[in-house]
Image (cartoon, rainbow, N blue to C red):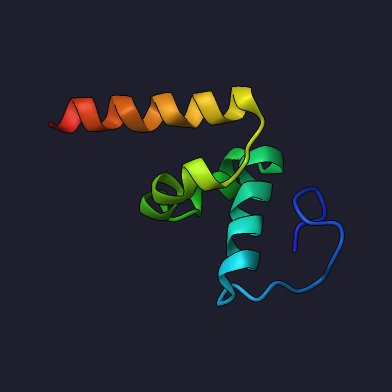
Length: 73
């Protein structure tokens, strides 16, 4: 685990839905571009409303996914 993303544990069970969601939230808040790039974009979009992100980060990603949908459809 990268300490700037996860500092409270050395191991995360990515098969546990709660821990996986928590990790995605941590990456979106604390991750660098290379960390965010590794996320599953479909999963992030699906979980976005459940992640309880800070408002400015939530709005950034919400508008990104809306623009992406509008551009493709």
